[in-house]
Amino acid sequence: MVVEATEAGMYGRVLAASLQERGLLPAAAGLSIAQCADQALELYRELASYPVLAPHKGSSLLTERSAFLPLVTATTSSANGSCKLMASRSGLLAINLARDEDWLLLPAWLQREQAISDWETLRRLVAARCGVELTERARLLGLPVAPLRSVAGDYYYTIRARGDSCSRAGSPLVVDLSALWAGPLCTHLLQQAGARVIKVESRSRPDSTRCSAPEFHQLLNGGKSSVVVDLALPAEVAQLLALIESADIVVESSRPRALRQLGIDAQAIVEKNPGLVWLSITGYGRVEPQANWVAFGDDAAVAGGLVVADGQQCHFVGDAIADPLTGLHAAIIAIDRWRRGQACLVDISLSAVAAFIRRHCGQIQPLAAVDDTLAPRKNTQLAPEFGTDTAAYFGSQQQ
Image (cartoon, rainbow, N blue to C red; front, side, top):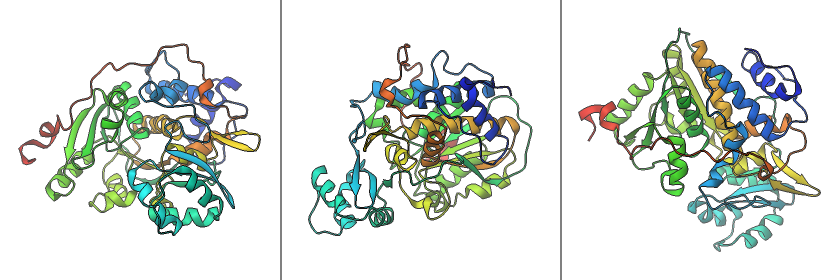
């Protein structure tokens, strides 16, 4: 693998080196987030031996959701409005109320009886509290709350387990258990490099982008097979496990305990199946207690320090920026490990990727300033209807 030893290719060299060894890597200082993403996609193309998404740049992946959703310019509010930067007594917090249940948890979080239904009331209450205590309580309750720059940026992934190696040829079979943006983007990139991707969803909790952003869902999931599983039925969980063990690459974005409760042990599966690459995408990693912390792209970026500093104020960089950055970096790891036939459990988190990018950037600028003269990507393949391919993979046993 050869990446030009110039400043323009510096981040690509850092990523290439990180695939070979652990240890602190030299910072590619002075680059923008857009340049880091561009070089990451170039490295992925080199590893895949295919001009994936050409002629588009990696930076275009960071902003393309805006073509499908009514987003606004990110400031102290995220582009979709669900996450706010708020000052506490002990520092800045990102508070992401992306789900209806998050608002319902606010009285318990702030230890008050009255419901909280507006951001200004919440802002006043947070300003009077200690951010450390607020963060601890939020994590216990499952609220995505993140203190600014609370995650280090030395590494963006860790190998948690290894299995036997085996030679690889042809195209990989990818089982995609992920949802939202980071995981589906990773498997989308793998698909663009020739992989066959099976998207697996829970019958009771399908990928929410099907309804919230259907056109964007089509863009990331077009051409994948669609399998639906009832996770309450042991027989269907057993079929899912068999499908996972037939895969070359597994990508999932659950908190580790969720799969363990189903009897699906990622480490044991990797150690049992030669050459299987398992990518675990989380908010803060697989190690306790961080494994239980909830995160989304906006608040995870703040935890990693990937924010615009404007005088005394900080702003969000762009739309859920940790998500597409993580999807892109996860794809690099997946294709590299699969090519080498190295069975491994890869722990990659939104916050760690954000912190890693921050470490290698110069002055961070809003991504609205990215100049991509190409038209936005369009759907070239339709995503199948929910569960269309279930019978093909699970046969008549599925009801």
